Length: 309
Image 1 (cartoon, one colour):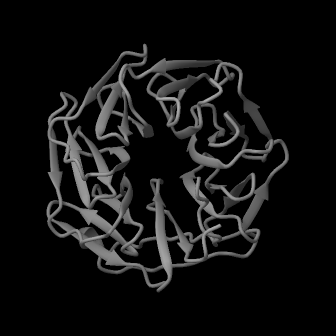
Image 2: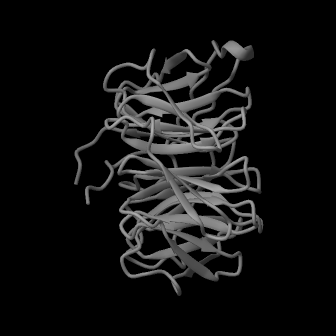
């Protein structure tokens, strides 16, 4: 598996000037981040800070709105590769360990607990989200399963019923969990573990990646192939590509405080906003890669280009 490039984290705050979002202020922070950290997932924490995963080193980072960074590694076993993360219903932060076959929990004070009992050996936990049932739900990309973990660490796995590679997952407006599948499907799983997959209307070159609940009662997903997709709770898919630059490499998508949907263009070095039609705003850092946009504050991670290793 290729590691992400060595990088510094970019805490990006997009200051919106009304609904048009024409005024944008970008701030970058690197002091306090270890060399070769390769930050990836980021989420808003219950403590008013932002929390991010460091994939190259087994650490979890915390950054305040003012840019003060603290890294935590105690309690994270190697190998780990912390990947996705989310705020939990218990007031803690939860994260997946892609290489460690574990789910981690970290308190706002930085105390880490890892859970592995109940996770299959081929799991490779990837995306994670808080569910409508008070539990955390995560994907197992290599194991083709969806996992559920309670705030006390009890894990249950559910097979998806067909070949697949579950990637990212989000809570839907219908009380279910929805996930992207790299084989070209959008999956829905009920809190009791019943899985349904939808493929009609999804183009073969979509390259499914991030997914989020939209302000319109539907689910919205981003595709590395240059599309933004909408799927209704009934499974009806519509794709949008007009206005997205060729080779943009869409990755993550989230709803912003302005009620719009925002997404990252990893290869295109842009942030996009979809109101249908699509518009995108360049990131000033010339060598930056936008990777994640996972918080209510429209915060994202940018990674400077560096040789892969």
